[in-house]
Image 1 (spheres, rainbow, N blue to C red):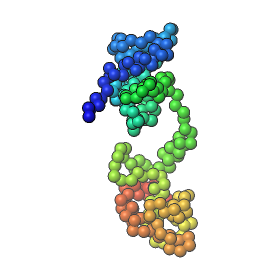
Image 2 (cartoon, helix red, strand yellow):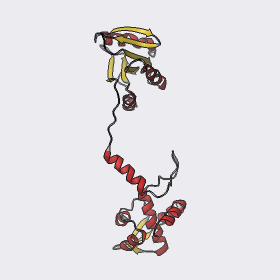
Image 3 (cartoon, rainbow, N blue to C red):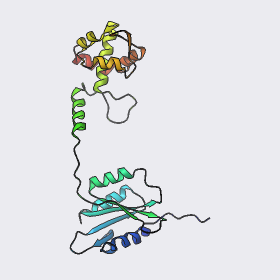
Image 4 (cartoon, helix red, strand yellow):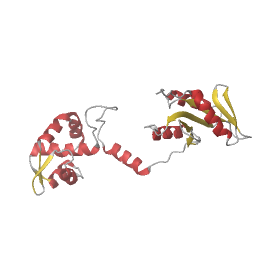
Length: 236
């Protein structure tokens, strides 16, 4: 069985040219460093940059062409039936950059060219609820207990800080009623934190009374630095 040769950039040109000519464009290759240039009347010039796969180099090339025209597309080869795992991210990235996205599906009959995104200025939609949650989390979090980037320690959220306040109170006072913990720590979500027990730090010993588990003791040691900041900035 003969091995199937991977496509070359030059293999993408003919399908792209045929596709654009079918829309009434006059198409020429390798004009002033542009892989493909298409012109139709007085409309914006269309520039298409070609690569055998989606790469940063393709993005950089396409971005450079935006100094020539607003209508720039990044085109790359796509195997039949095997779209890129990152296809949605590719389209989203190019939309944000104002670039169009075209794939050429090799080994198919008929028109192998697929336009996934037309070029155009990006206008992001603001997600007000998510923006609100972001600001609330920022404002409720005490200090800056995390280090940006990937690390082994769990992310210290405002919720986890509230749970630490409750755990600290239980370590100092032993089994305590929910209302007393709430009053002493100032944590409004005390009932929810104790009842949900997301982290396994709390154990109910009787109705409305909770104690600290070994996991809770361990958390107080693990997050001793965070706890110190909370103590310095809180009522408990």
